[in-house]
Image 1 (cartoon, helix red, strand yellow):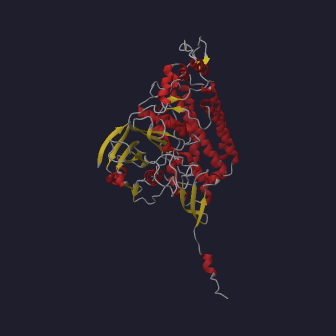
Image 2: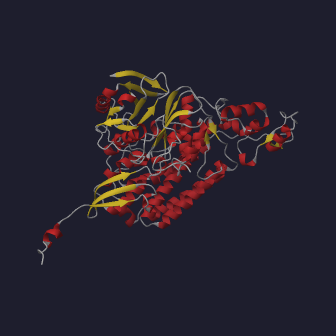
Image 3: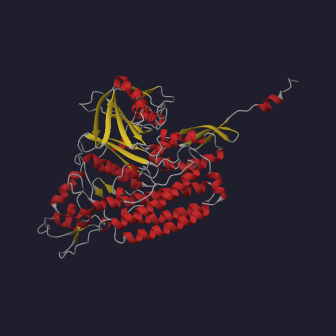
Length: 147
Length: 450
């Protein structure tokens, strides 16, 4: 299930296959020794120009255990052709808004999410702004060209 | 004549009502919309809409060199900007494997704690005002003013401070800082005592807050809530204790926790945290390594601008022996201060202003760090650094591709998960409870929407 595990700048990090992320997350929460009761953060990274990355996107889950005081970063690489990951909202409700943000900013779909819609941008917004091929000064139809 | 209307059936029909609060509502602090479903006065459910203050913080950070992101971080949490500054710099420093000087770390702790106090003052003041206690608001803002004056004397600005730098700080503390800070703290303590007298036993205030906006400890953890909001439920997670950074491990302070997870506990936790922050400041002031003493220069001192003019016409002989007097607005950035607050890594730390203006090595160093296409280049990789923000864990996750620009900067905004849990917290309470509960969230649009 785990492809790779290492310590990165003092933070334990594991790389997990995309298909296994939900099972892995459930296990991490249930295991009494690990006891990851908090999903601190969930976000995406777009590695468009990185030659050494096989897949374009990476979704990072940042877990913390309030009782055992340890952290874990889970990385899942997501190819552009199949930009979809299983949702973990059932494991941590915190994932609800975070996954909406990743969808909004990167266009990665979270399968089984109860309410996957844009969160920071408006519904009419075109594109996903944190993708590397979205220019930072790109105009939107509702806003119109710069006069 | 038509058929008689069945008036009885109409009178008994009940439907829930949708009430739209915000985004332009004074109690919504500007930029959040809550759509509440009501039955009578009870909230059946709520939908929270955010994003009205989205400024593409994370995208803009990718457009410029590392130090260029610092002014953006000021505007994340605009009530305690210093913590954001410092959090971002700590993340980049971890990425570069850099350790700042002792004095710099103490200054960062002091400035973070001052910010935490100003943040809590604003939060409690605003909550009290929204419940009708306008006096408290004025008192709190007065106390915040004492601290803002201190911040202004150190950073030169009240809000858009941009004080921290990767590898150090913009400048050392000004003269007479300690006395002024101690004075401000004692005045703030008086105000807090006064406010506690006004609110702590106030029947109206307590009735409005007690058993309102309750969240259980399990729910708070499941939603990823941190900070005073989580601690009001009894969990004691505080980044300063759990993973001490800077010099927090050398300082003695307590983490106040609540019991019920209601609005009153959040008020109490914030009040106590301010007292603890003052304790931290006082210890840090005592333990901070002594500042540098300005050395008397026998040589003639000429202002930097004049020296540049002289150099333009070729009068450069003997320049190296002569000290340059930095502009008065750059007070604290001179060479003697510089060494104490900046790490001695030339590939990261900006040179002292006299050096940048006064000799070729300093000028080149400055050039290599700030000009287009140059700048510090952290090794390829990524680093995360959490700090305890005023609202909870504030973390920066910085990805570097080895160039002078950050490849990705991710902020873990502390009030984002709290806002996500807000519908759950509001459900079951009354309409009038929306305002105090929302006030106790201390929603800061800047960091919520980024």
